[in-house]
Amino acid sequence: MKYIIILGDGMADWPVKEFGGKTILQNARKPYMDMLARKGRTGMLKTVPDGFHPGSEVANMTVMGYDVTKSFEGRGVLEAANIGVDIKPGQMGMRCNIICIQDGIIKNHSAGHITTPEADELIKALDKELGSDRVHFHTGIQYRHLLVIDGGRKELICTPPHDVPGQPFRDLMIKAATPDAQPTADLLNDLILRSQEILSKHPVNLKRVAEGKDPANSIWPWSPGYRPSMQPISELYPNVRRSSVISAVDLIKGIGHYAGMKVIDVEGATGLFDTNYEGKAQAAIDALKTDDFVYVHVEAPDEAGHEGNFTLKNRTVEDLDSRLIGPIYEEVSKWDEPVAIAVLPDHPTPCAHRTHTSDPIPFLIYAPGMDADSVTAFDEESCKQGGYGNIEGTEFTKIFLSLESV
Image 1 (tube, helix red, strand yellow):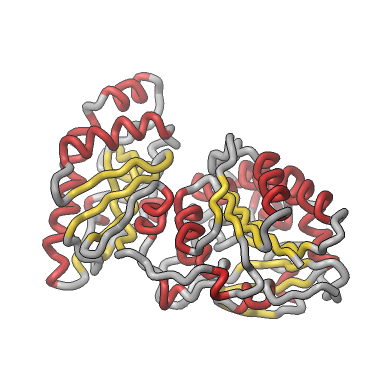
Image 2: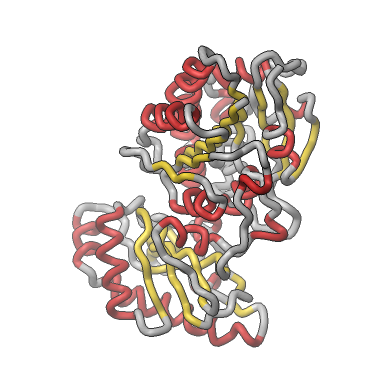
């Protein structure tokens, strides 16, 4: 038996008024997801433990089978692994967004989805002007970058910028959770304010403004942590000898790196609605020919949810179904060796809320010949009646990766 998880980031949602009170998953045309739900078994999964922020880092680590209460160390250090930055003992890493602030208000968390080449110029300018023996900026992808502080303390109260569009930035600046972390908080807040002076005058932003685009006019550090300690997934799940991860974002690739998985890059994978679904599908099919387990992550539904764009999010779900899940299913269903397929989001990103929630998410598990439950569609309400019931944490992965050929 081989195994593939196909994850639509933020795919779950709340009822959408414009869709007659249906959720995105209820409204979207998704024949493959619904077919797999009919042939397989479903349930509801709590991916975010109590006390944790409902971030993609926590939720995806949970779906991959890691107990985040023991292994989670923050988002930035996970992304660092994929961009080749080794977080050393004594260093603290943070995700460092470049965001758009307008009239003192956080307009968006992505600087209008700035491109990576533009962002690279800005991050290099920041490292030249603000970097030091202690402060280091590193370029990531699009608006997602890395800040490393030598001797930094992680006991900080930080607000993810995608949680607070439309709110005054000064009210949300970094606070120390302990007295020992106060110098780190003071340093970071000074960097935020000084970055605004530098970025507002940078030619990249002057050009963006002239073209009617949002400027990337502030950094926003968050999710602090030290180097994580994670067992390879092959040690957690002995039947997984070789595994791969496919994603457009550094976070998921970084988790894969620490999990001992092969990281597969797909040309044209953007993390947005225009991502290369077909390329990801083919990469997954190719990986399954040699590997026991493949994890395919699609960011597009989450980004549409953050924008509050229910029409676009509906499209991303339909594209995920027809352009990625469909080709994978049609190919592997011909193989002699059976392939188990799981489909799920990591967390909801409701369009009406524009950020993540910790609500349980629907999931489906299909394997050739398995006993199906009574569920006939894949969505938030239908899966509440699923045969797996309500589960949480690593239970999902243990169930999925323990399936055997029928």
